[in-house]
Amino acid sequence: MRILVDSNRYQDFCEGVPEAIQVIRQALKIMIPFIVLGELRAGFACGTRSIKNEKTLTRFLNSPRVTILCADEDTTHQYARLFRQLRKQGTPIPTNDLWIAALAAQHDLLLFTRDAHFNHLPQLPVI
Image (cartoon, rainbow, N blue to C red; front, top):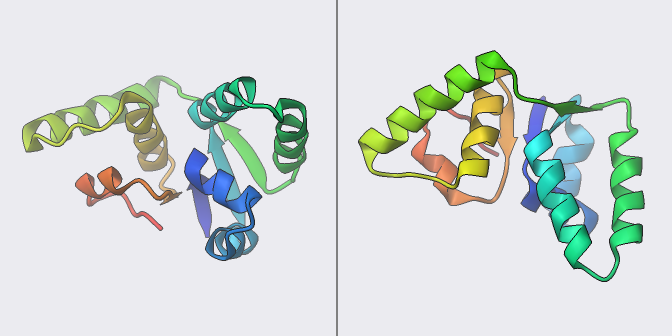
């Protein structure tokens, strides 16, 4: 199983939520979108345990199963296609999450998230 991890599920994993631990442990490949890294580090910067949280994240990112995904030109085409679909449906989602969805679609990954608004994209498999 190849997954793309959203920030809320990374947080669940760090907090010891059994479901998150199980999915992350079973994944053969774990992708972290650059957007998620930005969201996490913004949270760290505003918190009181930023050094501890950064060390935990660094350890996670150093796993050989983890890859950071960045956007490229193909991602922009995925983004535009999903944006158009959501607009026609009248179901917009936050911009960062649209980029996350575009990366998941581009790389044919299972999206590991708790955000229900991803359900507006039925072609995107969510766990």
